Image 1 (cartoon, helix red, strand yellow):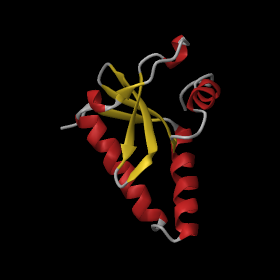
Image 2: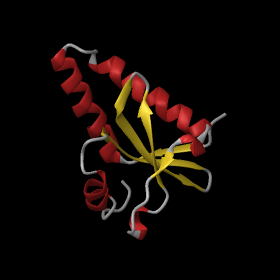
Image 3: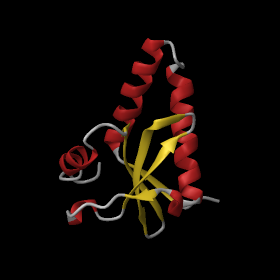
Image 4: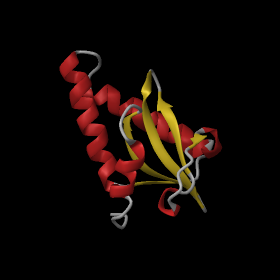
Length: 111
């Protein structure tokens, strides 16, 4: 049974935008992509230590981990372990400037 899974409000926008992008390419439907992302997040909730740790100098980014979405090796779920589970902070393509994106995003309080 997974621990608590906290998903920041912005993550839903990430999933929607990526789903729209892949649906536009005809790669996969938006709903199916969303299901794959949520299944991956569920897996992370059950085994939070499996993601690779991202090493950043900023304390704000301490403990950030990443794990690929099922069937989408380059799409990463970015999260960190919290006391009773995980907090998902982003879903994005691995080629993006993850550090800069998360620095902006994590400046805001969780919604």
